[in-house]
Amino acid sequence: LLAQVAVASVALVAALWLVFRAIPDVARPAPQRYEHRRWLIVSGRLLVLSSLGALNGRMGILILGAVAGAQAVGPYSVALRGAGFISLALNVTVLAMAPTIAAAYSAGQVVRIRLLARQMSRIALIVGGPIAVILIVSGRSFLMLFGPGFEGASTALAILAAAELVNIGAGPVATLLVMTGHERDAVLGMALG
Image 1 (cartoon, rainbow, N blue to C red):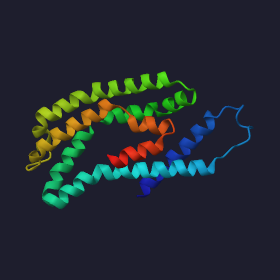
Image 2: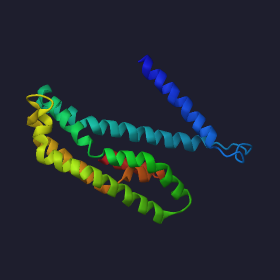
Image 3: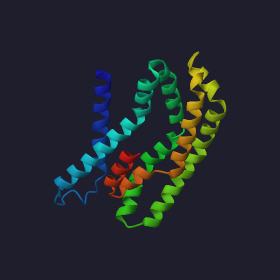
Image 4: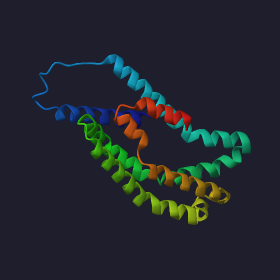
């Protein structure tokens, strides 16, 4: 816990230094303008969106535990984590491209945003597609790495892998909504999902 706090503190100081360094000298004397009400609304929506995302990631485990018992949860949890490798490329590109999408939106470059979204989806499919195929075709072998009894979740792994493939094919939908000021729509979509 102390190591986590120390690392987070170092990261916070480094981030503050990088942000301060990135502010142009011309902008420093400019009067500061705060939109507290707007920021509270947006941050509340982002909190709900993050909470729904976390809940969505655990809902299957909770339902399975209630329906099939605790013994089924372990193998399913491993299958769920394994399928998570498929969307890793999309997650990385989202982190890298989110500021670019926001900048393009503020500049009114809708065509550029479409191009970026397509590129992100292609990268994710190029990287995640082969991982999905491997997990669908030889998921049983992957699950056996975790010990006896885990291979029973191979069907679940194949279904989850196919779903992740569809997910990355759809692209960075939530990120596009959030970076273009439509976080309310992202929350509604996540809630409905």
